[in-house]
Amino acid sequence: MREFNVLVVDDEQEFRDITIKRLEKRGLKVKGAESGEKALEILEHSYTDVVLLDVKMPGLDGIETLRRIRTLKPLVEVVLLTGHASVDSGIEGMKLGAFDYLMKPIDLEPLVEKLSDAYEKKRLHQDKIEQAEIKRNLSRPA
Image 1: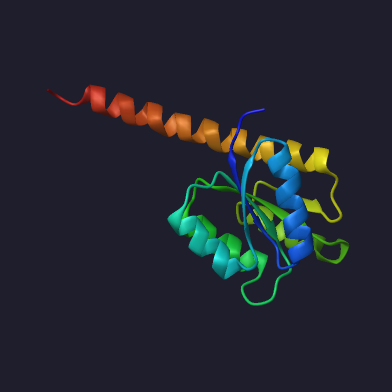
Image 2 (image 1 turned 45 degrees about the horizontal axis):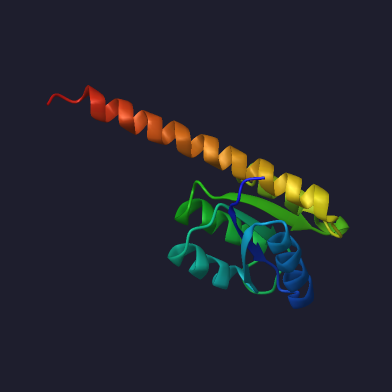
């Protein structure tokens, strides 16, 4: 598995800490944020490939955080975390550009698989942009 950067955003400290440790043991570089506001601050000042974002948080909720991530870092992929009662929010998030959503509680294997798929999508998109920029630069007169 390729190494990539994940930001885990959840207001439940125990869940966040356990998830970070489990993902780090799988070789991922992981940071944590306790709120949408903190997540946006981290995204602005560090490199992140995929955000694992809880939908239901006090203050800036997951859906509003997703909207702001789309503006701030449009290439960063977002996987939403929802509870059974907030599946509609997961669907709404996907309409707003989230890669996918997972329902809590989550097992490690499906989580790692979903994050890896999201990273792969981001990497392919970035490669296309880089190739287009190379073509543009090569087509310019010397």
